[in-house]
Length: 248
Image (cartoon, rainbow, N blue to C red; front, side, top):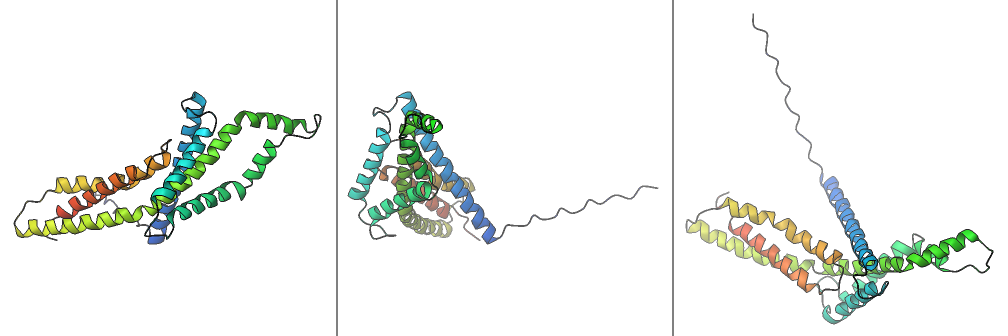
């Protein structure tokens, strides 16, 4: 007599994360991404200082970068859809990031304590050794502070540039839907290959300008990075809309 067949238990469907959990996960991923980009920017600046790649000695390279970023803000960012005065918004945002990172955490007081020499020769030998060690690395600490302020200014600029992505994406979506209707009523052919390749470009077009502009170790006008990727994002949206299947 044949043995009865054993039935395999049905696979349990995986529960989809809720809206709150998904939003919290995305927010944490964004924070981790920004922190990693900031650390990478500081390491690049330190590497240039250690190898002598920057022509300016010490922390002067980062100081000039900060001055150039603020100058570009004052000259070329006079209007914004989000705020009335974008230059003041970016400057205040940078100051708040500096206050949160150094003042509220006590790092500023610790740096001042290390930078202040001791009064007596025989007083606090451990502090004198710390002060001597600080003198060896004070340029790197100042460069890291400047990079954090530059990072905050650039982060504010990218935030102010988000309406450009949205506006160009709406234009691309509108034109793409018109082209889809024309293809639908004229009997045009569908191409899922083009649609999926355009879909793959959406995420890189949104993420790459944040990586490049936040981590690049030199002053560059934000339009040279923001506008090309905003156009690429809009073209991807247009191609996706125009090549979407004709019948739902």
